[in-house]
Length: 445
Ligand SMILES: [Fe+2]
Image 1 (spheres, rainbow, N blue to C red):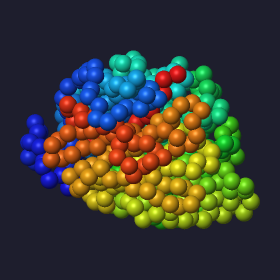
Image 2: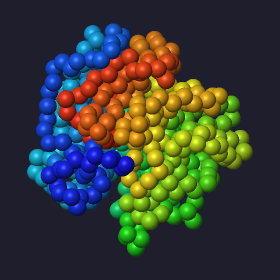
Image 3: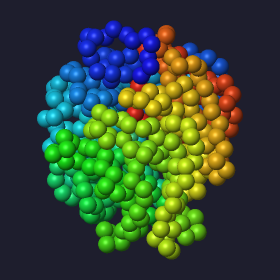
Image 4: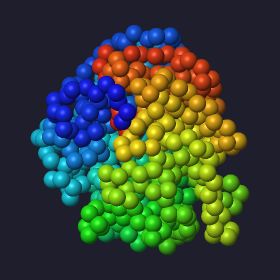
């Protein structure tokens, strides 16, 4: 961080970067019924914006990724906003369990990376364990294993098909085989398919993608080995994208060689003629020196996989560094035109800029919205449609920003189609929201 006004905190001066400034956790769970809105909250915006993130409850974890999950929720309706934050009440919060104690128990998730809704269930997700279910008031219901059918970890980045309502996801494991397992959940929330997928190495696989007919696996070489001290980027292991029919098996996977690289997040993927198009935030390498080495910062790239020739090509889409790419979730797996991304500076720790970027993924055009100078940092932008029948990009961008000088976190609402204009609504929160991971817009029915 380039945080110039580091706050003193309860852990003292020799604490790691993720316990300083606005990375440091907050202590309490609050409910604030009505917050003053600067500007005008759109009448058509009705639902909840939930955001999950790392918020260590007791002891200092050894990595940012290992803090206990805390969900911040904003209920928006009738032009008004209320807020609440709740820990995901896992044993890390209530029993001060050490993260290493939970490494072999699928139920012991910090549940800290994403929060999604599917089939009426709100799930707090991390990638090495089972999900944890929350209710709409963000109370913790408990660990959720799809009625006993899920026996592998679940990624924090499952994909809901907007056409069929199915939820596709994978789980990776690095201590024991299978290294990769695929799962498909029907629109009613029943886990209906589980397939072991063969990959050559135990790797860290953070995200994946779907298209109308396929599920896609990113076999990129952040490889786990005890001899190498954990996860490490190993270019010599190569990179491959697996393309499998959504209801297929390991025998149906076609693997496409790509340049070895690292991808934490994808914007989207879709089918176009005989090709699969995948748009991602891609870095040439990361973790070459181990898990604390964040290496290059990613930029937007596109892979084209030619289903007729089996060949791949890649295109650099833009020079802005960033991550946390999102699209209109109603376009997942389809030819989406618009993508949104948070700006990040290259550096040794995540350093959010004051900018978010909007891409026309068809023409390559980019628009940038800046929330201020270097003391301001903006988090993941999430799209909320103007209504169930609204067109793509017809709606709002919701994102949090933080100003190090005032230590104030602001909820911002932008008109997506007027991306560079001032926010239509801002809510300065009476308490800060630490930098975190991912969130979702849950529209009211
Ligand atoms: Fe992620």
